[in-house]
Image (tube, rainbow, N blue to C red; front, side, top):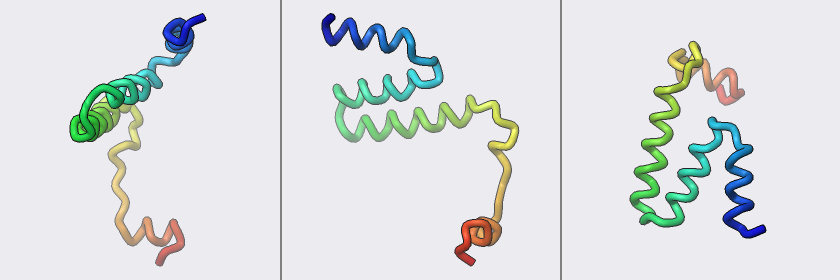
Length: 72
């Protein structure tokens, strides 16, 4: 089995929520470093905007975070 065939088989088994990571990696192999950074950031924003978690917009103060992490 060729590498291309093995990759196709793995992609067929990969959950849709993981395909974005594969896409970013593959695009990174063929585009400039600056373009890679832009694509990565855009992908993070897309993932955040499409996230259905009701708690994603919950806000925490810096002081609360420091206390929780044992830094205060």
